[in-house]
Every structure is written in structure tokens, then in C-alpha cells.
Length: 344
Ligand code: SF4
Image (cartoon, rainbow, N blue to C red; front, side, top):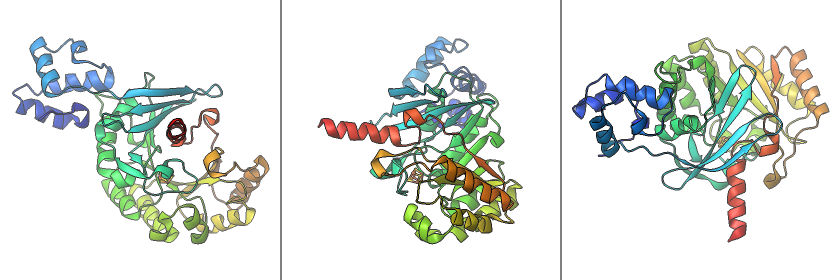
């Protein structure tokens, strides 16, 4: 059976090589070529004997996703790629330059089942989980150095946790990207069993919870998953995460004009966050044409943030990235689909 070696962590790669009658030490060499030197063909793996390269081509052919569209923000250099996978499905991945290095926003699923009302990915529903290789491919699609990974693209990472953890282990491996777990973030809509499983791994990954509303009534309107997992159950799991890992978690709060940006909601959020090992990250929404949602006015962002601060809650306001290139994840793909529908 053919193997995709980008699905394998180093140990599995070594075991597979041994099962094929090849020496174990070739594993590190191949792993380095793919993940450190980012070569795209076995022919470029010059320290492998020619016979081995031919065997690999036959037994583990390399597939690379096609870049369908590339957008680069003129404002901040954010790059966004729309990739076509082997089965024709499309996903997107975003590289965000920061002062401290580049961060890659990785998708974990094709589409998403959770249908949050402010998210373009939710519009087309869930198609399938991404494989480990398809997540690795997103990182390998950029030529730039990478210093952090955020699982904040399309899909709910905790509903594909096994593959996500293996992907992160590959990116963590010293023979590849060598990125520390502290520089990795998993962002979730709030799936308590997944949060607890993640906590039990003991890995110092940063956990970000998409909260977006301080009470169940409003949150259920914005995020239907809240009907299954209300705020208290999500925060209980997040507190367990903080207790297990000793790490502060983030409450993400997208500010949408006249929907969830009133000062009284900020006061409610203070009561919710008080005494928890967390901080709040406010994100002014990228305006979405499809949904009639607009970005909160600057004045309201400021007031909301001040209420939190004076309530003793650590708060940051995330700089908008790539607002000129639809960089709220899911928007590029859905725009392409809308355009494609228009052409039919
Ligand atoms: S915000 Fe995240 S969890 Fe919600 S629909 Fe979009 S991709 Fe899914």
C-alpha cells in the first residue's frame, strides 16, 4: 500500500523504512529533507542512494497541493493561500508576519460543522477532517521561516484532535521546524471533552477559547455549539486546562457592531473572567459582506477594553491583519465559491 510520508512522525517513518528493508538512520535524513530543507522531490535528497530514491518514488510518492490563489496584503504583508488538495477540496492557510517572526494560521478541517454566525467557513458546512499531511503541507507551502503555529484556520481543531496533535508533534521535532509547544496555539469554539483531553497530554500548548458573548442567550445565537456546551461547561474545562498545565488561557472575543459590543456586556464579561487564569483578546471583526456584520467602531472597542481593564481583567486588542485580503479565515474560500456559483 502506498504511504504518504508527510503523514508519519519520525518514529513511524523509521519503522516504515525498516519494514521496507531500509536502514533506520535514513529516517532522520528524509525527515530533514522534507521538514527542514523543504525539498519537494526525492531527486533532491542527495545523500540518499539512487536506488532508495527510486524505491521511495514508487512506494511513497510525494503529492503537493496546488496553489489556486495567493493574496498578499499591501498593508501588513499577511499572505493567504488557497490550496487544492488531492481530492479537489480546497482549504486556506495564512502567514502572518509579526515583529518576533512569522506565524502560520493552519486549517484543521475542510469546512466546519459548527456554523458560527460570524464565520464564512460555517456557511458551506462540514466536508471532512484534514489528514496530518494536509496540515503539514500548509506550513510547507510557504518559503519563509516559521516561528509559531496557530490552529485558527478553517474547522474545529478539537474535533480532529488526534491528527492535530500528530501534526504539532511533527512541527515540534528538532529535525524539522523545531517549534516549541509554547509557540503553538489551539483555538476552539469550546468542546469540553477535547479541552480535557488536550489538558491531559500535559503539553504546554496555548489554549484559546472563542467566547464572543458573556451569556448563553447571546452566545447560542452567535455559536450554535453553545446549546450543546454552554459557557459554564466550557470554562470549567478551560479551568481544568489551566490547572493541569499552569498556563493562562485566552478568551477570544470578536467585536461585532451592535451585536456584542455594548459596555454592559463588557461588565458581564468581567464577572465571568474574574478569578480565572485567563486573559481576554478583543478582535474587531473583519467586515463580512455575506453576513451583514460590521466591525465595531473604534470608540466602542476602546470603551469595551477599558471596562475590562478597570475590572482587573488582562486584555489585549488584536491588531487587524490582512483586512484588505479577506484574512478572516474562511472568507477567501467562500468568496471563490460564490464567484464560481455566479459563473455557472
Ligand atoms: S468560527 Fe471556527 S468553529 Fe465556528 S464555524 Fe467558523 S471555523 Fe467553525
